Image (cartoon, rainbow, N blue to C red):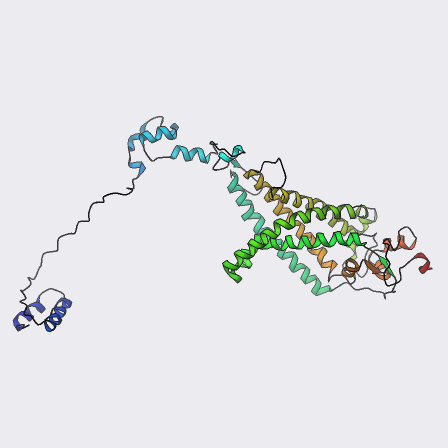
Length: 407
């Protein structure tokens, strides 16, 4: 291909892009055929606009308010039902959604009447605004139960850690005698341990399900967290009935020795002598343990069990409506948090907080010195023969403290 210098200069001098000229030169050297290039005018006409082909089918969007916009001038416009509105403004389902928002009940073949309600009616739970029941429950859970419940658990855990750091384990002031007193029988220990293990399983699984996304999910990731919470949810559901049965056994077993006495008032007024060098005399269980029993085990325990059994849907002839389930969940969560707060102190005192306390529940026996220093009135009753030092048929390897031994 041959190019004249005049033709090339005309291309470069025109307003056409430099890139076009370079491409043209490159194409000329690469081709073996002669091409004649016509000069390009200074102001070429713009290319004709490309018209998109008209759509041939499919769904066409439309603004429902542009369909018969004068329909709203009808005096009865605001009172139209969905069928009437469809005649004047097809696609405008505002009447139907207005009824849905009001909690209107539609037809449903399910056993509960509320099954026909897409959105629940308005209610105001403690801590929520006046709104539909689903949103009110969400507000109680997200604005109160989760933030305040989690904060209280963390505060109590830190307080216990600081107390242990400053005071340490409560030691025995006297020397052990080698003579023991039976504090818990085998049946009492079995009931306690079954209930305690079930409680720990429920507490751990409940904490992970309620608060795990804040402290565990960012660490282990979504996949592992999903499997973990799924497993813990099933553990929670199947452990609940075991906790319920063992709780009833614990209440029956320990109720008698937890009845209030006049000495409990003195113990409470003096704080049990916890901050002093000696404890306030008490019977087999002191006033603090009695408060834990009646407040934590009996009241909160039955609330947790009752609401949990309801949430498990194992109670016959009960309406498991959304509203009832929401109320049961709020009771369950609030009572469970309060119960965990109370038992955190109990677990601390029963393990590392007091020397010999864990051994008492493990073996069932305590030394005379331990009984005298921590439950002096109970020890005096045993010494006076009012309570037997050995209640089980089997005897321990150590000598049992008896009135004769004391003499």
